[in-house]
Image 1 (cartoon, one colour):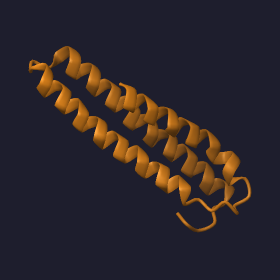
Image 2 (cartoon, rainbow, N blue to C red):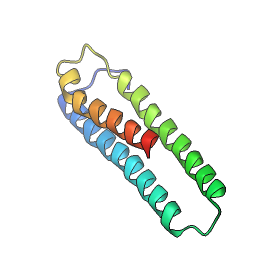
Image 3 (cartoon, rainbow, N blue to C red):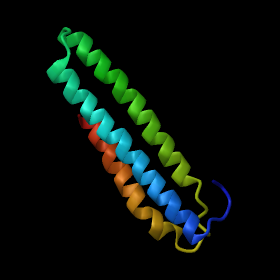
Length: 99
């Protein structure tokens, strides 16, 4: 991702990143809800499983942040195009941490 991007490439990157971020955040929230409502295990086992999922989800989201950081700042319009993605990513990380 370190090369210059065209506006079309950035648009595709933005859409792909938004989809990836939402997929992780929604999947984690659904897994936590299901674990709390549907799993027939003790609280400690359930909590350990949720923490494993949380760690994995945060690792994936932080990887996405690294990828976004590799978009060259010199690309005209890149900061504006990616600002919404960075905001959505920060919100998703906060939601995963606090769930």
